[in-house]
Length: 224
Picture (cartoon, rainbow, N blue to C red):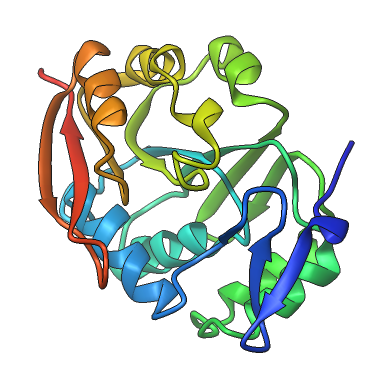
């Protein structure tokens, strides 16, 4: 199994940038604010939270999206754990994740809880208020085999221009097949071929205001 230790350079101290895809793992402006705008607001969260809510994600990276939504779940007073499944081809090494986490808030201790149990491997991790499954491998192969269906998708691969495999029409089709009726998806990109792929997968697709320097992003909803 590969990890990204030899495929990361560090910008401005503790912001990891993938040399494989020439793209940062999170916003150089404010990663937490970007996640909140794109993936929480983009999926109408936390308003849609309910018991057994399932989030699926393409691209686990540093775990920032997980930390932000796990914190929102806890603060919303939900009973039972949030279900979070992430598909990741190149899991980050524990030392790299620990370094990246220095740029994040503590999230009432959640950041350090995740850091203590992260081994750079796939599998299930149970934490207070959270059941995390990280599926290692090429999502084009692993997602079709997944038995779950998400209430909300975080589509957070590297830039479509640099990592087109994670945004292909075929993979967007699998996202659609693994979304519940009335479910949703959101992504920071508004690339036309991504929006078309989501539309062909059955989503109603909307281009909305993006975060920071990104003028637009994409929201998608699966009809009931």
